[in-house]
Image 1 (cartoon, rainbow, N blue to C red):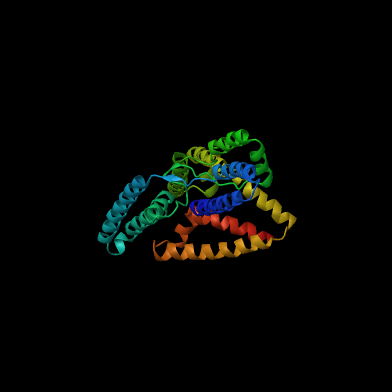
Image 2 (image 1 turned 90 degrees about the vertical axis):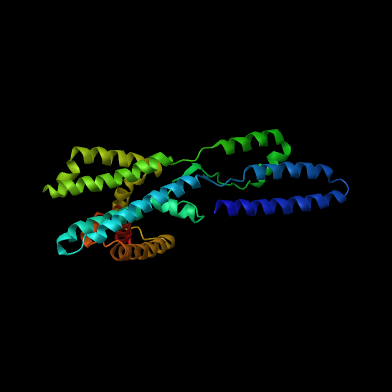
Length: 288
């Protein structure tokens, strides 16, 4: 994690300072110590800081979602018998969607003391540490004032990606698209007709806009995968490892949807996360 990397850099900084102080016993090294200290100051300035997280908000959100889950599960428990099977399954699906919601997943992780996987509840992004090169340290020794200015510029850099509000909007859009298509399907519309629906078109356009901001080029990945498959570019060793890991993740996720959330095969086909994983898997399979 970022905090562990920062701790490692600080230990290295302390050891370096101890070594440099010991050199003062040797005649003529006073100037060397001053220059080296300036270099180490730049090294320290380039160390990142951990992300700031609103734990109280995460705890409150987790409690709210779990209260909703308890209410749904209690309602489902009263829907016994064959006549209530469809309504009972609908309740189970709502529970599954709440548990799989990325904001809720992040809240659970934060409460356990872990970093949020999807970036929710972060009030200030982490600053990634960058180890200085020998050239940078040499420049700091010669021009300490310039090195200080450069380090301040590094600290002021803003992290790319979506804001917490935009991340929530993206997840809400994914869910809204699934719900809208379900309604259209019940009305007898085909998949192609559903995709041409005005509301669906608008939501998909906004979703792709957010995805592109979150991960530049992500909306073109499918086209790129097709091009790669035509070129028959073999998988690298790293991609083969990722391919095998993805296959295992899909099987585990499917089993979880069936056992914990009561998903049918039809429900799983509509799950946006599963569709995304299977699309990535298909791209790998075409090249393997």
